[in-house]
Length: 284
Image (cartoon, rainbow, N blue to C red; front, side, top):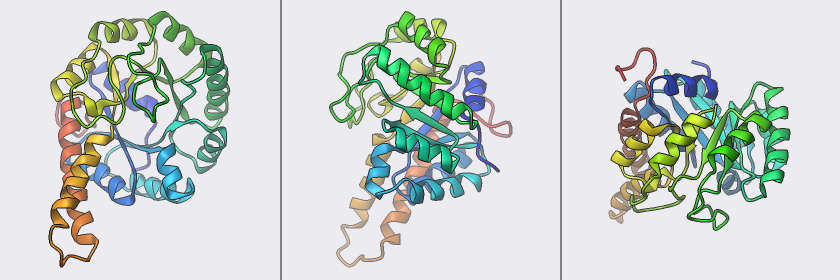
């Protein structure tokens, strides 16, 4: 199966009052786990490569090409998505590599600059058939750059989408990045207002800090793409720690493989929770 358009998956999920799951790729094992989990659930999936992951690998090309190959071999729709990209050179590199979508993050800039920069990225990406997600109202916890407690203004968000032409919008509604405890409470009334006023699907970042039942309430209120990263890293790392308790273990496959399998199982569970399915998957 070839990779999918983000806009297609989000519109289908929005119509079904469900959400598409988006999970971070750090290594090849992560990409394999995300696709395996999606196949278990019979659900589409977004494979996200962050600017931090690109920095970790030292270049955009190797991890992106590997992720694209894994996505293209999937039996379910899979989107290869660049996440929290702040550098225009990485946007251009992603376009040349043919990624499916890019989240361009200019949210640390003031409103006018964010709008101007994002509009330019949208124009360049749309010319090559690439969808664009943006952010308005800084989501807490992102390397200290995003101020906790900020909320997205619905009228401002609607104007921003109209002016930039973005395909999806990440909004600040109470979640925070990199949380290891699932204690965040979402502003459900704000989500409902945003969903009513903003003409494109809404994206929930920082969902690792949001409990299952709260995520479900957020989706019902109007969130259509749900990003989860730290929670899956905890699952992966817990298995690695358990396996490395054996001092005789030296074969990396003996701990990376089980960690990959555990993440796949958790991805399948989360995607079932979110409710978006493929045409051949279980009923929503």
